Amino acid sequence: MSRKQYSIRRTYIGRLPQGADLLESITKICKEENIKIGKITAIGAVKKAVIAFYDQVEKKYHNLEINQEMEIVSCTGNVSVLNGQPFVHCHIALADNQGRCFGGHLMIGTEVFACELFIEEYEGEILERVYDEQSGLSLWHPASILME
Ligand code: ZN
Image 1 (cartoon, helix red, strand yellow):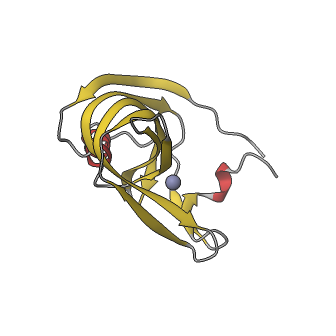
Image 2: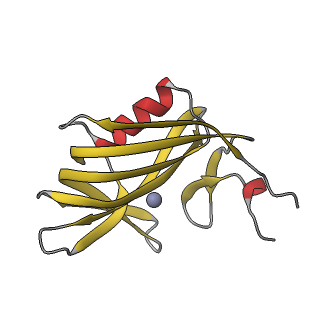
Image 3: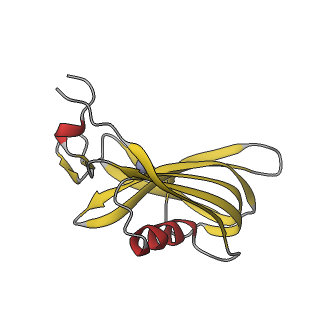
């Protein structure tokens, strides 16, 4: 087994405009810059959000719409390749005005109030997503498994 190693090639740092869709915006930037392997980090606030929970038995996502302003406590994710295209996978933790958190898989429909975004692109082998029977998800190809 040989573990793949990566180093940072480029880092993009900036903010997103108010009203932008968080996931769509990150995906658009990654496609425009042709980023095929990378890391996403963001903080800020949203006007509303759509997050999802993956039911491991049903093997499907259930969406949760939260129609209120919230802080982005943490948004972290990755960029890899699905069907030949840059594909962004992010998870997000959001806090309401009492500090209570919601979290899950970031979906389209999350509207930015303010967002400070870092995108790191790596130098190294691209990771392709392929359908994984066991989980029902499109996961990184088996050669990327770090443990036997
Ligand atoms: Zn996810």
